[in-house]
Image 1: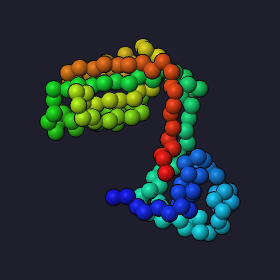
Image 2: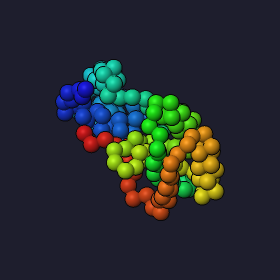
Image 3: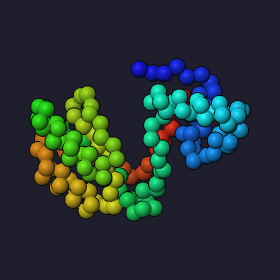
Length: 153
């Protein structure tokens, strides 16, 4: 269920998406309001589930995680027990940045961040040791052209 947002809500959310570390005073100044109404709106947006947890974005390459692989997974298994084991394995692996279940020929796609190809192979070997997978294709990203956490408001 989506919540109805007015223009002020959208401005506040845009500011928070750009830099959630800003002070309330700074956000209020940028959106043309005062601190208390901005705080009340942020509180209501949190309560409504529009704003989730706040975190910080780290530079993967600066931390030595230079390889980004997109992993396409096909499985012949579709029962609940297999899926539970698979999802548990994915959630336990910090290398998995994103995981999506897909419609179509590919069942799952993962975004995996590691130091290099050898580290990816270690990830792959550990994953297939835990879960039976029919087919895995790994695609190395040569260049990140666009990456954003900003949702279009």
